[in-house]
Length: 207
Image 1 (cartoon, helix red, strand yellow):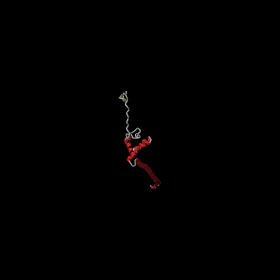
Image 2: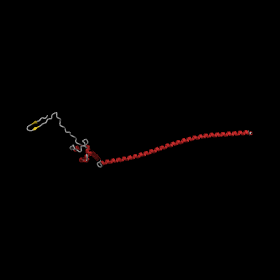
Image 3: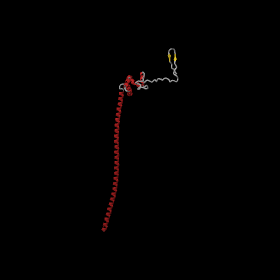
Image 4: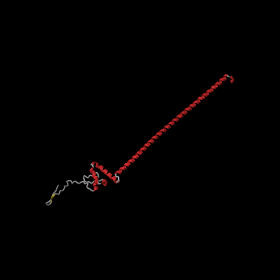
């Protein structure tokens, strides 16, 4: 319900909101981005820095602003399409951090150090590969030596077994020849005895 009051010649309408009417919408106050907060300026809806420097990361803009300046950052972002701005901001922040760590060389010094580490690791890798090849060669030679030793031992065992069997054969032949000689000697004795007996039988004067 609306009530109106008039005073004097000037009429003024005073609107009273009934309890049933809805309250007026409250304006949502957004926190400014980190860039606008550091620069102490109003952060508008079309702020080009807001999407890349949120209020929760003030150090990110502070580092980039310290090295490149806010105007250069804004100019760079305005010249780039939106699809490339995120990568550009990351590169700016990385370059700024490197420049603060190394004011002379900046990110070039970091790249040089990384390249030097890669070269050192490649040299160590090549050295390790040479050692692996050398160890494989030594292992191959050792296995060949062991095989040769096993072969020699086997040949020696075979030779000893052959000599042992040959000695047994010679011993058997010696025993056999001794028996034959004994038989021959007995045959001669029997022949001599029979001859003498015949002579004595034929010539009684020899008795």
